[in-house]
Length: 260
Image (spheres, rainbow, N blue to C red):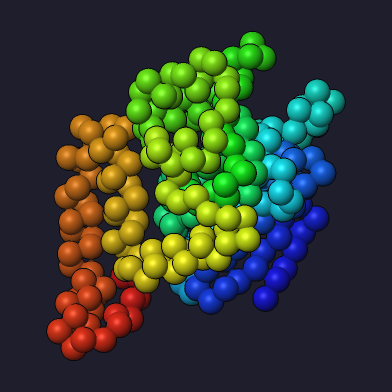
């Protein structure tokens, strides 16, 4: 089933929702309305117990996302600076705080805010032609929307090189650095991302939420892990899904997760 707005396409594949940025003529650059559309889709997915994972991709073969729409910015247009729930949901995604697993399928160049959007995703699948860059320093700026966090995904020296030269890295280089989880032919991109999404989504929702938060915190704020670990131990290990997981294992069947 496919639904669409002008700037964002949505398609359901069983328990996986595919969100497609749909501004190929503008290199899928981010406008305020596109940011809100993404946020609204995230909020809907979070409230739908039948949705276990999200695949985020884009139209065309030139760019995944060129970041902020500079034309709209220069003309004083809406570039997503509001505080409404949808906009806040989008920025939660960029911080990696969306509770549902998000797998990116990168169909082309991810630049500036486009790469910052990817850093909020849990797994990144890229076609061989994809490129990644944070060119802000070349424009008298810096990656102020979370791009400086790239050192949480790749080695420090490589993170400094990318941010201080503003130069792009290839999909293969991204894979070698650990930014990208898999590099595939463009014709296999979405199918591969869907396969990852289904395998991730087959795990218990509470377990996935715990893993997302604690693994990220272990990199960004290790001291906070000690604060959050007891919470997740209490929530997950006493959940109905924990009992279901053990029962299904003993009965040699697939578990039926409830998310509680």
